[in-house]
Image (tube, rainbow over all chains, first blue to last red; front, side, top):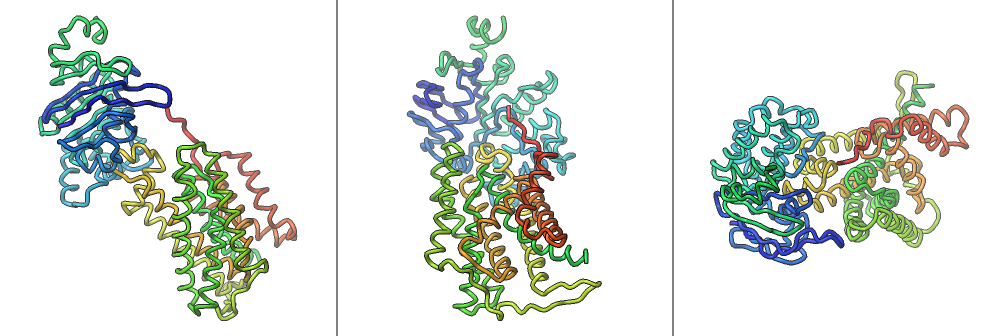
Length: 234
Length: 291
């Protein structure tokens, strides 16, 4: 479904990604794990088109999307939940969701999707008129996820959904990620919380300083002694 | 007497507000002080004048023509003078804006000459209307009415329409707005279009109010409107409206109190005073550093 081949990304003189390749097949949850600054977010942002690739190729459903503008990529069926939620703080919950549906013009589809989001996150329905800044961290995460679902993406990019949340909420969020995946949305997940990520993922890639060092089935990586000592705190 | 001065002040202040909105919207969306905005306002006044004198249009059609031409100007200026510099330092775009401003006023000097030109008396018949011990002229009514209508229209666009909501999203966080599928460049063009249209209407109204249109009218009006935008809190739309009215009223009251030679100083004295007490302006938000 998504193929990233030999991707290089630079931020000025800093080499953020060097020759990274990864794939996501339809229906999977693919996790990218690794330390801070390993380049996980950069991969998502390159796929979303908000950081330019210096070289390499990104294709989605067989068509090349390298260098396409972000709005074109959303239109093709990829949406992102950015790191740190980044909800529009001064806009209402409803308006945030409307922004997620910006690319579509089918009112019926938008309505249906909004009902689906409210069913998934009943809290958001209760607070639809409130400005997003008045929501708690967990609710903001739900809003950011609901907002990304509004375009009915086929591939959802999730960047650190557990960041800054209490353990109980983290479990809840991961349950919902699984539910979204179960409903047919393919997911690419960036996570610092490697044990949670490996628990729900089909496959995973381990990144270190801008390069992919390990990959495999999530269950195999979770059993790998190297991964266990470096990322699972054992 | 006070009522009379209030009416005069509100009429003048509504025009300041119209122009201030363009500064504040552009600043809100790309953090650029668009120094050429005053010259767009001046161009609007000339288009209105030409529409009335050469094409014998009535004042409302002339205003629409001014708004249309200014819309195009605003979009074109952004496209050629600011967009290529979007990724450079903010100072480069600012200098580019000053350049456009000087270019436009020099161009107007070349095309129309140095003397101020009046609107013909037939452009808008001025009548005095008595009410509650004060006089309001039909021109003041026109100014207040048109400004109020345009500001209501703007409020509607920003609160209710898809593109208006996209403007708010881009001004909060343009990168996340792009992730939503919003074409940020289009939204920026749209912002310039709206702000410039308001300035165009303002130009015609000011041309009528002072009965003078000149190549350098954009400088002082632009500075004062900019002061109004900062006074209200730059980036805030209601702030620009409030700042414009506040500035207009105090300026007129100052003149009425006998300080007419300090007319232009009043605006800036108020600006300094307000910023000393509240650095973010009347309705401005404290700027939060993103982590």
